[in-house]
Length: 406
Length: 231
Ligand SMILES: Nc1ncnc2c1ncn2[C@@H]1O[C@H](COP(=O)(O)OP(=O)(O)OP(=O)(O)O)[C@@H](O)[C@H]1O
Ligand SMILES: [Mg+2]
Image (tube, rainbow over all chains, first blue to last red; front, side):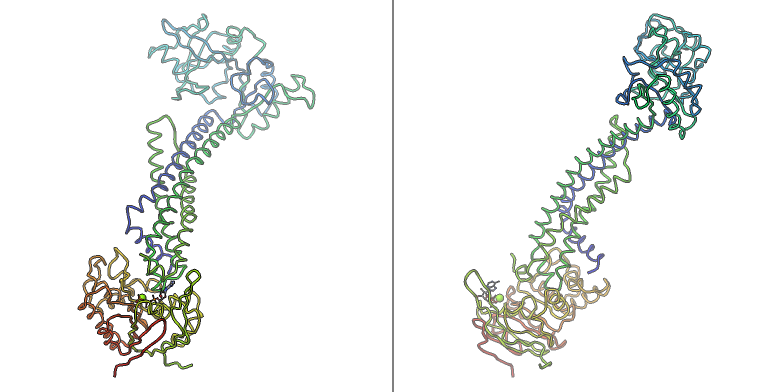
């Protein structure tokens, strides 16, 4: 029998017992659906992270105090402060792979306008900060070099802060209070529509870093970090090297000794974050594939029942000339057809499921071709693997005994 | 070796081992059957009729002895080759019909052709021809459970007939049918034998029906005790 005829024969056999076929395939349908849906959650999370980092700019670098073992920590290095405004100035002057720098100082503070108040992050940054971060100012202006040098009490609000304090009224030119000091609002950042998460630019206030040093931190000789943009994404490695060289000399670090600062870039952090999501995806997928395995065992179970139930049919087929191979292939084809059909329905279920998840929950989902192909392949091989034993059992039957079987 | 015999059995023995005991189902049986013959095998229960049929039908092999079918020593063939022989040269009719449940008459009839290389169209043509030979024209798409016992046995005969075999074997084909229907089935076998020159071997308990055959063989304890031939 050729392959198409075998498949047709097995389809006929399966359709003769539709309900049972469906129930058998159900294990695979649910298994594949679960795999697709869970992987889509993991991939959605990964995509989300990547997107967030992409919007920050790929040529972004930053310098933080502390050694390599501190890498990846957010929030400005805490107690360990050894970066100075002069470090930043030296980088700006000497490193030619660097385009812009911005010294940063941050704190959390209560802001007050009229009878409204709001607790938010205050970022003291340089005038080139919007260029480094790819930010747009929606209304008004960002502070310029002069305002920074003079340490003026001006501020630019994130959109969420603006809404909470001004509730639609025109904020430009108004005075708000930060740690009891009046700051003039000169601009509003364009909203990104983010909610929650660290470094949410909608929920922050930027002020000149010089002002922050003087008024918030009280130390004008220290900064917490330096944000830098390389001249291009391709130059980030070169820029990193130049920055390291400059700072090692300035910090008088002996050759071979460990840096007391850390130069990182966003793509590294993005990769790290994406990787941790990847691991989550794999874990979820592995858990879901257990249900696929259970589905496979279900197929084997039903195929064994089906072989026993159809011993006479097998005898009849053998008596009219079916060879061992024909019987083997027929039952194997039934198992494979079942699991492939199950796999197909499972993929549909998984896609619909992941759409529903992203619709009714906060989770983002992404169904990738890779996960679909993987689930399909997995389902097919489960059919082969768990279908083989029953099929072989069927093919080894003795025709005379099979014909006599009641 | 003579070649005009369709079937040659030489000192065929069949021994079943059940635990410690041996059952001699066939003891040293030699017999020839010519092409176009019509043979009825008779004998008491347990005399080895079915055992003989299974060997002749290539479903089983003798424990000892030789079996030639159309000059080929099939008793040396492996399972696959025996399956080919069953597919090309032999048709079976059983007491219990042995049709596939929930399947139409024509699909049952086509079954042997599934295992040969033939197009769907050819299969359909041959199967409907077979069904009309056994008088089931117009019943092609009835399911087996919608047919009477006599009709089911006709489908079984059509199936046995469809691959144009040289030999049809029927083990008590009328055993589950009433006398009148049994007679009709026997008439079909007679017609096939006379008009198509197909060799027919059938097992029956009923002496009257056995008269339709040209030759009769009586078995007891795995041995031939009597042979008869119509004048
Ligand atoms: N698979 C087997 N294992 C053991 N013994 C068997 C087997 N098949 C048949 N026999 C024995 O062989 C002998 C002949 O059996 P067989 O089925 O050929 O008889 P039969 O003439 O067809 O009888 P009946 O008219 O009842 O069908 C019997 O004694 C039976 O018990
Ligand atoms: Mg018998």
